[in-house]
Image: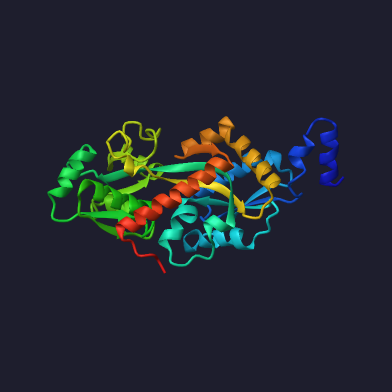
Length: 322
């Protein structure tokens, strides 16, 4: 029996609301992701895909398209995908809010090419320093850094949240610091562990094991509340630095021309999946803060963050990447 016919019969039997299912095509739903398999964002994508499969009988697949700082994945959805509800980008802050200011040329326009569906999750950061640094809190660290002839802060790449977080920290504290850009977050953390640089912003999930083992000191977290993986570490707001609050957030966006009924159905499916206690627990165990906000709220976040990071980029004098 064709899938569409089976859906209609279920709806007539009262087992499936016809209006809730009629819009999506009878094809698998594809999440395009600009990160490789096995990464933290990949875990988020696969957990969400599993959670949404119940509402998508044809299935949900994750299509990893890493490279070019996420531009390959974003261009695949924003410029090439049909607006039929079957292809979504699980985008992140870099692709959707920072890239317009950090790249001189993009193959896509976040504001023009996408329609928001749902904010999914966020990864908060912790500012960590070598265990040997004689500072037990952020104020003591600033005093220690000011007494040194030079300060190097590691980042996981130019134009990333960790890079601009370091710039905001230094500017607000009156520090003269030089950013050292590494190829990956792991490389940057290794440099902090061996004392080659004086600190970095790393995701809570990445740095928490090293902090618990006493190999790093965590002086602040950037989220709106203390991180469950580092409950003893204060937030930047608690320390009087709300300007340092930032995260790597993720959300679903569709091609801009996707019809409103399809967007509404996809939004409902995503929010239902994100409300499931088991899914939320898995994401939180992996260090992610579940968002679960819909189209309107996610669209507002993208606009606010685009404006915020544009101002940060301008203030730091960062030269757009060619």
